[in-house]
Length: 101
Image 1 (cartoon, rainbow, N blue to C red):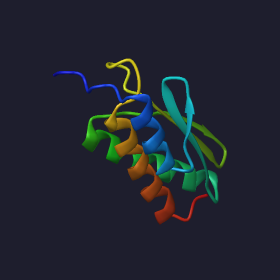
Image 2 (image 1 turned 90 degrees about the horizontal axis):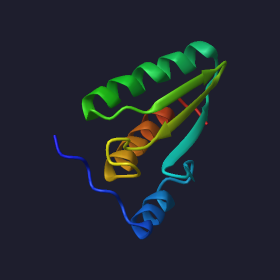
Image 3 (image 1 turned 90 degrees about the vertical axis):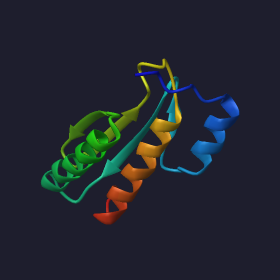
């Protein structure tokens, strides 16, 4: 399978502007989601896992009590691609659906 093309700096900036809860960390983007409870955090991660499997693109996920920290980067391409921003937008939709901040 061919690697996804890397985005230009301008494309990254434009994509990040549309996702205000995400920030750039080097060759990745990251977001922390605050959930109502630990169980809600785990349930959100389950929904994110389903979306990640469907997209064949998998975030790094850290759960600490009610907080879920997500990091996206296309490792095979060595940086940020459209796949990262598409999954970030889906994660935002999933978080909003459960009322997470």
